[in-house]
Image 1 (tube, rainbow, N blue to C red):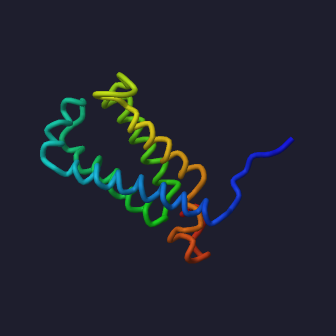
Image 2 (image 1 turned 90 degrees about the horizontal axis):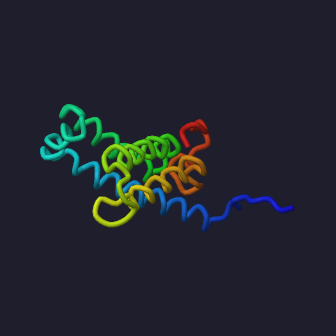
Amino acid sequence: MGTAEIRSTISNDAVFMGVRATIGVIFIVHGMGKFEPGFANFLPNLGLPPEMQIPIALAEVVPGILMIIGVLSRFSGALLAIIMIGATFHVKGAASFAGDGGVEFDIILLAGSLLIMVAGPGRIALVQVTKRIPRILH
């Protein structure tokens, strides 16, 4: 019986880098939009105080940056996965999969974040430059 494993090749590492960069850029762009005053006005509709604007925005921007450079990628993936679960169920109510108000985009971001959380950043990451950085920071 065979076993499933991810072989360590440069193409796999390039794919992980691409997934990290894509997810990171999307979260940075979405997080930067949350710094706008209109987002603070929208938060009470979700049952959240307007004071949560900055923490919510930073919770997307900072892990997005860390994901791109490949530091704390697993932690960033976990945090972004939690954000996407909240977006799927609390914000959108998981009303429909596709179309207006659909969650398909949220689900793919959740899947990508979980992939990086489980598999790690790959070898093309800032954390790989030095072996002195503890494994937990990968």
